[in-house]
View 1 (cartoon, one colour):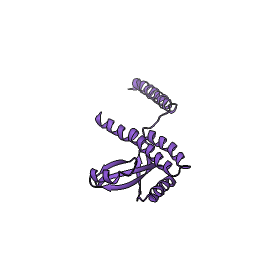
View 2 (cartoon, helix red, strand yellow):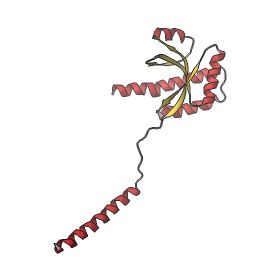
View 3 (cartoon, rainbow, N blue to C red):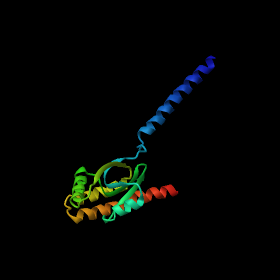
View 4 (cartoon, rainbow, N blue to C red):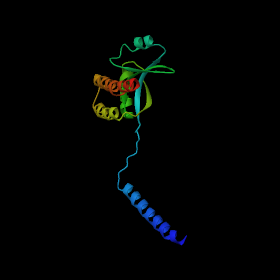
Length: 157
């Protein structure tokens, strides 16, 4: 038994040394966690409808809109922004034109769209009149391209 004590102690020391060496290697490596940032955006809703025909009839006065089918109906949106001030500006613009617009907060995890939206939000600062509606149309078009179409493509894969 005394013959093996030296070998056992040597094995334990070598194991501790190699273990410490391996752990120190991980300290030097930049490890990035897998996470997805979620941003809360303001969607400007023009109405909720029971049928697509009803929605199309009521939304015919808008130059551009998108919609989402949910359990409680079809939600039609005329604008998206990341800033509360811009949401109020858009809401007031459509209110002056005679429309009731509701602001809904929706979480989005598409960082590409959010960065594009931030650029459009800068344009809202100086926008007025029909410029607001034009910017809203551009944003909705980008949303369709970057979020809706991407989600549909992922579903088909």
